[in-house]
Length: 278
Ligand code: C2E
Ligand code: MG
Ligand code: MG
Ligand code: MG
Figure 1 (cartoon, rainbow, N blue to C red):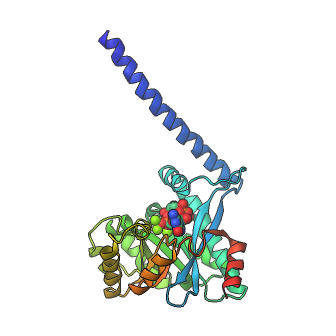
Figure 2 (cartoon, rainbow, N blue to C red):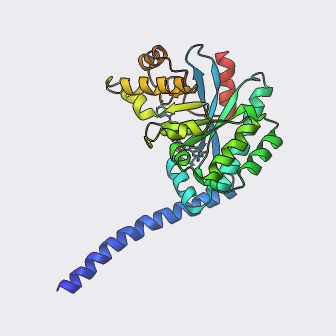
């Protein structure tokens, strides 16, 4: 009968949802355990100047290596860590580790190299960010001017006084900001005025399309011009081939990251990369 069927249908969806929730719950437990056993790693992807091909620094990217040599998708880990609040602890570790590794490279013959760290919006709303940052800088000896924080547009349009104040104070320390995945979020550009970022990172979805067609050419050029007008530098994400690099160079893009140079590397391998490229 209908009632019976209705209940079965409900049970079917419920089971499917239960399974998804159980998977997430298990992953969350494993994230907790991995934090305890220090199983996370921080890898570094070179950021390269398009004019000189000089390495400007690296972006720190979270990695969770598995026994079989694979990695769990960082975006998935970050998402769960954000939803559970674990991102505060994980993010603090990332900041600490990135500052330590960057200071090592600076002391081993690369005094100008910088590091960029991705920040979750939650870390901004926590209220302890400044304290965490100052501790990471003090413990590592890294100067604040060597640290860049990558923020998403969603944080910046969220024009709360708290966020604005934090950005102001951190900026005063000498920390710089990049707007990550630019062009994928909101089209309200007003926030760019209020907030003094130093660079825009053009999302890799626009960059990778260049190897297929030039449909996004006007869009990328417009972002580069917009950035120039606001005295921001532009960084292209996800550059994988020479033709794309040359186009970006011609259009006046300042810097780039991508597999054309290197994927993200463990800290000692990044140092080796710096030495080889010298
Ligand atoms: P993102 O900050 O936009 O980082 C760029 C992503 O593009 C990285 O993915 C990087 O490995 C990938 N990538 C770089 N070059 C290329 C390329 O040439 N081709 C292709 N196909 N991909 C390229 P990843 O490491 O999987 O990270 C994904 C996202 O997870 C990051 O996007 C960032 O939003 C987040 N994330 C990673 N580590 C952290 C972290 O420590 N904290 C926070 N809050 N988020 C993080
Ligand atoms: Mg980033
Ligand atoms: Mg990005
Ligand atoms: Mg991206």
